[in-house]
Image 1: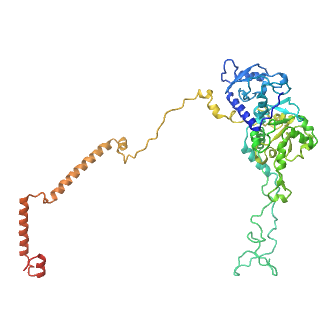
Image 2 (image 1 turned 90 degrees about the vertical axis):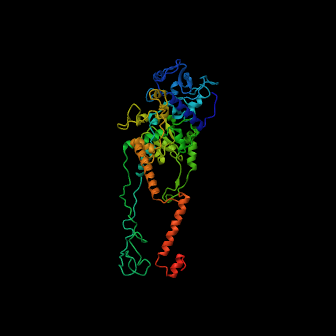
Image 3 (image 1 turned 135 degrees about the vertical axis):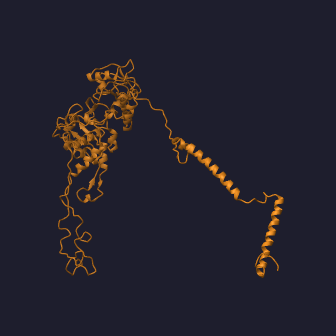
Length: 530
């Protein structure tokens, strides 16, 4: 078969996102398809029965998606392209641009896909989006085996629970510490009392040394005890709810099957063929570290080990003086399924690599620091044992008593896609087009129109007030006119002369009749000469 360069992780993730988009597009099983195509429900039933169908097509979001039958020697079955067992009767087609289904040029190789230039790359890059996971060969041979994706890797991811459980589990490894019970009190100090111009703190007795007379016992004194001395009976450990611990482990496992979360945690998985990564059981028989390193290099996981080797540095704090001198990043986690497997000694000396049994998975290893997305390498027997240990969607765990996997509140979290689907839109009422404009509220005490709406009589009362005001103004003007003297303009010429003569006569009479004419100054003031 014509060989091609491996896809970059960015390209793989983009293809996976396209596949998930198509999965959401065809999730409604009862949606009618084009007449020449079968319905999604019929295809799901055929997939359940394991039937092959030549040229079967599902009508997806971007048109008909061909599902081409492969020969037995090609190693591709339509179960590789469809998801079965999803909640409800939906069928998920994890394909992007597959082409017309013609085989690419070259000879057929067992275990490889010959359905065009894109499909082999897509199937290698589909990551956790498909139900079947390829079992990688430890010696680099062709991949012929596959296993189903356990339901525990499709469980809901709860980083809040993982963080809470991790923080409490980490407290259970603490060693109690406390200061000495006698610290700060190993002297017979007494207070000097008042009257000596010093504070009343107890002071060290004696003489001949600088220590004599110094304060003691108090936390503000040099050599005194600390405030609230630490005790070894502090609450060091924490009890954790069992269901919470199991939920956290399940969430950490589910996050390890999502390439974006593994990359976000800092693992170098650009050259890894698939996530989750499953190796055949021959890995469990490895005894030498050199053999383990060769396996890691063949599957593209040694780059993550090199990252851990390069990150080894001296600790920043005082732990460097307490046998915790060096720190380094975490590498891959090897999970095996056979008790007493020899690979434990083979991998334990590789920097950054940890080994764990599938029966004893620890959250501190699955999510170091409470951060989801640990890069996990599974052996085939361990991967197939997950359904037995944690249970599946249909059965409870056979190992953990009365334990069932947590289920998400929504079978499909693509809420916008559900709301905008034809099935939902055909039953909801149309959007209301009425626009209710906000009206400015007017003060009826200042606005007559608003007042009339509240009290129709207000208009009549206002009219009566205006008429009364006009009448009052008219009466006032008449009253003032009656009191005022006529002005010069109002008096005729003849009347003016008569008035002047009468005034002069009155003035002369007043002068002549006055008894004060003999007074010289008063006469001068009146303007009369004697």
